[in-house]
Length: 113
Image (cartoon, rainbow, N blue to C red; front, side, top):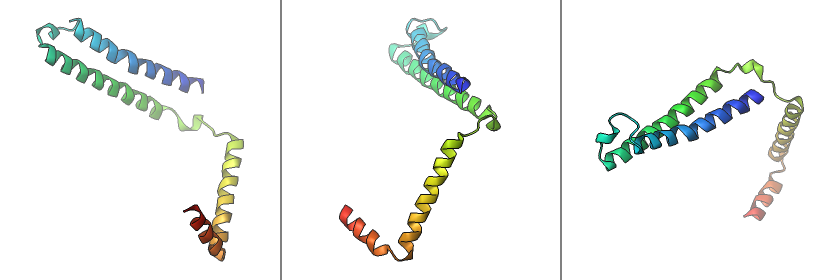
């Protein structure tokens, strides 16, 4: 679990730092050729590159998540038992409504309206 949180934290930091660094670099003429651009073009280009950089960070984060082995994670047994009980309970309720108790469900839906 710690590795997942660490990867998320690092990706979140890059999603914040990389676009700010790109905007800073363009606005302070740190990138070659950025001093030759008009202010309007400089704003458009720096914004476009910053957005592209965020998308690259997101794609890298998704790649890292997909690369993680799926057998490494096992669900919590207590959660599984509660989920199965919930599914079985809702399945039993729907069977009662279909078997002849439909008038009660109609009355209930009319009261809700």
